[in-house]
Image (cartoon, rainbow, N blue to C red; front, side, top):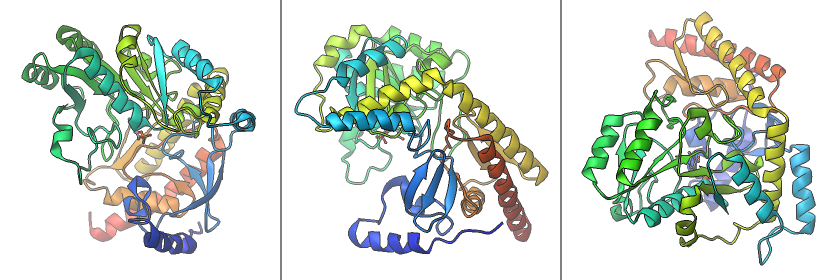
Amino acid sequence: MKTYTFTKSYEMFEEAKKYVPGGIYGPRSPMFLTYGSYPCFLERGKGSHIWDVDGNEYIDYMCSFGTNILGLGHAEVEEAAAKQAELGNSFTLPSNRWNELAKRLVGLISGMGWTVFSKNGSDVTTYATTVARHFTKKRVIIMANGTYHGSHFWCTHNTNGIPPEYQAFVEYFDYNDVAGLTAMFEKHKEDVAGVILTPYHHPAMGDQVMPADGFYNAVRSLCDKNGSLLIVDDIRCNFRLHLNGSHVYFGAKPDLVTMGKAMANGHPIGACLGTERLKEAASGVFFTGTHYFAAVPMAAALATMDIIEEEGVIEKIAKLGASLRTGILGLAKDAGLSVVYSGPDAIPFMRFENDPVFDVNRLFCGEAAKRGVFLHPHHNWFLSAAHTDADIEKTLEVSREAFAAVGEHLAKKGA
Ligand SMILES: Cc1ncc(COP(=O)(O)O)c(C=O)c1O
């Protein structure tokens, strides 16, 4: 199979470095991928496909880090967005879409009585912890080791420039470790405001782990016993596992739920929802942002939710994801390679065994990218309703060659 070159991408990356610190910051930097084997800049996208600035086409399994659940440029979502854009987007006051979206979300997400809107996921995870602290009048937030809840000071993994005091009341435990969580509650008796968890554990650079049987019941009862709240951060999974919230999928009973990413099929919006008893405390927390009120993403969110509900999107992406999993595991086996494939089929992650710093996975994913399949070597992947059986078939063809390249590399190393 012919492999791609990325001349323009890397020229642009060099140019970007002149004007932007590091050129491209965060996980979208080519430094976080397989440098030289991936493009740096994209020009356009449609459905499940993206095209880079050198004209190379890819089947995209990052779905813009999860936002595209229906596919890029989805006609009905874009029509709803365009209709709203004609009326206006960013007004002096909230638009007519405010109540519509609030009512729709509160009706949809199980157990929740109110909602607020933001632009980013980090805005609402921070807000949720603030509501928990304000409601309980306690300080400590407990989160799982390795979890990402956003880029804000209290939880960011990169603490350059952040005084340690900003993370003073944040404690950690290992996901699923009820004894460890109990010990943390003991350590901070009377002072735990809340526990924040992703619906299942999806750390960067690690296998995805499902909640163990009884885990959520144990967390709930620890929270109830100690007068603390449970926050489920559904930003990465929302609408890929259950229409009424991933907490329903796993039988959790949260007090607060955060959403973002796929909510509006790529339009920027996040939300925090909470139970009725927290509403008054929530209204006492200062929460605003110039763009939080933008109407276009709200119109897009309304359309996105309708389509997910009406078109059986969750079932569709699970089925596509199952074909991908079966195919990839079969190919790895044929190539005599041991891989670990984890997470729900709609949000999978694959790595190689005995590959602690993901060198082999970087080779595999780089070889796939050079042949038109965009995976990620140390972040989970995403399926969308725009992926097709033909996409999966092509992905498997490409994966066969990428596994062969890995096999050759390992044979050369004598591994
Ligand atoms: C679970 C989770 N929480 C919070 C965030 C932060 O969202 P954002 O990047 O929109 O601020 C992310 C982003 O990846 C996430 O996956």
